Image (cartoon, rainbow, N blue to C red; front, side, top):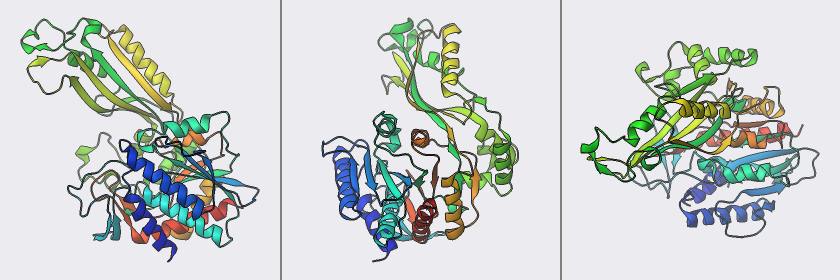
Length: 444
C-alpha cells in the first residue's frame, strides 16, 4: 500500500475511536492504539506515559533517535470534539469516502481534519522516511490528549524541571493549512489565551440566596443584571476589544503583504459585510484583528435554569481572553478586577481564571519557518505569511525546548468541529510530501 493509502487507512481506524474528553473508554482505546503503533510500526521509544497507569488523556512522548546531531519536535493531538450522526452524510464515528463540490474526493469523519488525519499522515510520513533510510534528524513526538480543552497536561509536562526533552532546532504542528482551498499559511507565532468565569451569587452581595418570585423584582437585586453591568466594563460592546498592541515594522510589513491578496469574505465564508465587527479595507481589518486583545463570551446562564418567573440566585459568564504578542493578558485581567473593585454595586462579582497561555512569536528566518517555506514551494503554492495566529496553540510551552515552533502543512480539510468534517484526498497526498520535505530540510 502507498503512503497515502496507509495514511487514509490509519485515519479511518483512529477516527472510528470516539476520543473526546468525556469519553474515558474512547480515550483509553485511542492511547493504547497509538502507543502500539508507535512501537510496532515506527520502532519508537516511549518516554511517556512510562507505564500503562490508566491515566486519562496522558501526554504521549515518543522518541525516534537516528543518532543525528539535531533533534526536532513533531506535535499533534489525539482528542476530538463530540459528534452525533444527525446531519452527517455518514456516521461520524464510522467515516466514509465521498465527493464534495469544489473539493473533489474527500474522507468524512469526526477528526478527519482536526486532527486525526494530520496525526496519522504525520506518523506514516515519518515511518516511511525512517524505513527508507532518509531520516537524518532525531524526532521527539509529542501527542496531546487535551488540545481541545487547553492542553493543561502538555503544558505542565513541558514546563517541568525534569522534562526529558533535548534542545531542538525547531518544531512543527502538522495540519492542513490550505484553509478554504486557498494558499497555505505560515504563522510566525501564536496569540495568548486565558479562560475563566465571571460569577454573581446573590447571597454574596445582598441579592437572593435562593430563587424568588419575579414579582419582587422592583426591590430585590437581580444577579443577572449585575452580571450584565459587570460585563459592560470588560471589553467593547461588539468584539470585546480590551486594548491594542503597537505593530512593529516587521509585523506591519507582513500585514501589508498579506493584505494584497486577502479576502475577508472568503476568510470567514461570509457574503455580507454587515456580519463583520471590523471595518475598512483588507489591510485595516487585518491590522485591527491582529493587534487587538479581545474577550469572547462563550456562554451565559442563570441558576436555576428554565423558569421565566423567578429572580435567579446566581448568574455566570464563561469567557476566553485572547491577546496578541506584545500585550500582557494578566494586565488586562487586572484592569477588569480593578474596574470591579471601584464600581458601585459590583463588589460581589467574582472573577475566576483558569490556566493561561502567554503569546509567543518567532522570526521568519527561523529554521522551522524556512523549512516550511521550502515544503510549500515543493508541494503547494506561495503561502500567506501571518505575523502570528489568532488562535492559541501551546506554542509558548515549547519555547524553552526549541528555537521555533510552527503550525503548518499542505493539504485541505474543512468543517472542523462541525457536521461532515472532511479532508481532501488529493490534499492529503500533498500534506504527506510537505511533512517529508520539512523533516529533510530540518536535518541540514
